Amino acid sequence: MAFCIFVVYYTSSMVTASEYFVGRSFLNAKAMVIGVPKEIKSQEFRVGLTPAGVQAFLSAGHSVYVQQGAGLGSGFLDADYEKAGGHILSDASSIYAKADMIIKVKEPLPSEYTLIKPNQILFTYFHFAASQSLTDAMVKSHAICIAYETVELADRSLPLLTPMSEVAGRLAIQYGAYYLGKPQGGKGKLMGGVPGVKPAKVLILGGGVVGTQAAKMAAGLGAQVVIFDTNLARLRYLTDVLPANVQTEYSTQHAIEAHLSSADLIVGAVLLHGAKAPHLIKKEHLLAMEPGTVLVDVAVDQGGCIETCHPTTHDKPVFEVDGILHYCVANMPGAVPQTSTMALTQATLPYALQIANLGWEKACDQHEALKKGLSISQGKILKAEIA
Ligand SMILES: NC(=O)c1ccc[n+]([C@@H]2O[C@H](COP(=O)([O-])OP(=O)(O)OC[C@H]3O[C@@H](n4cnc5c(N)ncnc54)[C@H](O)[C@@H]3O)[C@@H](O)[C@H]2O)c1
Image 1 (cartoon, protein in one colour):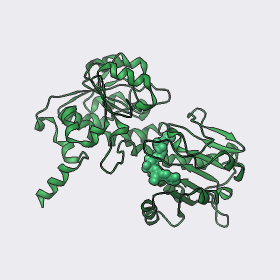
Image 2 (tube, helix red, strand yellow):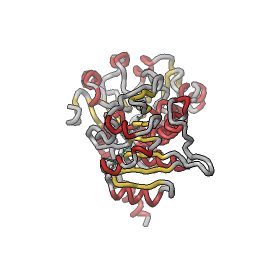
Image 3 (cartoon, protein in one colour):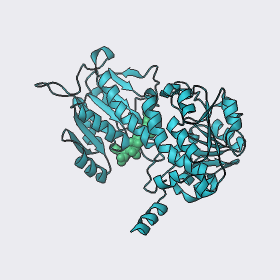
């Protein structure tokens, strides 16, 4: 029995809790210096590592340097990091100069390119396909770039993207409910109605991570929810686990169109792996909707599944087309950095510890999921889609 459990653990490409706590002393690898710079992208308040993460690295025999103020936007003081055993350095250049591995949230920006050292490990979101200049800079840096967004498990799920989809799905309903208010330009409807008055009707396009979380939130508020997907197995699962005020429907143009005139809030949550999202709601469909209907296109980062959407920011999140309100913020989790940082780092930490404990080559050899994240290494592009 014990042997079976051991085999299951070690044949899995997931990083398991037992491996995560083994630490480098057992594995006889070199101690690593971890660097956590402050994020400098506009409106980015998340941080790559929490004080709890610092403590985990220390327990495994490594050391951690955190840039002054890096955790403030996520609710962590420098003193919290110091209490956990981390060292605070005043500027990003000192962090990059010291670290063997940099743990971040967003891709490096041009002002950081020159700070990166050859053979330095960068563990962060990159989204290389979206930026030729970033790709060129990382090739030139001769760093080892392991991208959160391409770490992939055997079932094709993306464990370091999932937590952000969970946040965005839940937020889609919070924002959708807010913008349905009359002062915000919405219809003026309460999601759950009241006794004797019908609740709002919410359509959710796509029943993956975003769609499921959105359905749970909308159902919890008492709305009438219809969730669409093309994956029948997924629809069966959703029918089993979601409450009775959520109805599932197979996604066709015909089925979606039948609900447009009675919908109050529509959430776009479709993803086609490696492709642009299909436009399930086209411009002419807006004419079938009542004025003040709210569209939240979470899939806007993949081109959106609503034709009239274009990316917006937290500063100016909504715009109107033909009387229909569009919310299309491309980095929704940035609005709730305290939750998002916790959700992201609890997913990244086991992988980051493996890289530190084993060294990046061994860690990628032993964990197929991490190997999929290895995108650019020592001047070479390792993924065909980036090349
Ligand atoms: N805006 C943001 O801040 C933000 C944050 C997180 C995720 N996202 C984006 O949200 C989107 C959804 O992410 P996810 O994690 O839920 O993906 P997912 O893969 O878990 O789910 C996508 C679902 O879409 C379904 N689908 C495919 N074609 C469909 C169709 N024609 N009609 C209905 N459903 C269809 C799939 O079967 C799948 O269940 C992605 O584009 C992701 O990048 C955006």
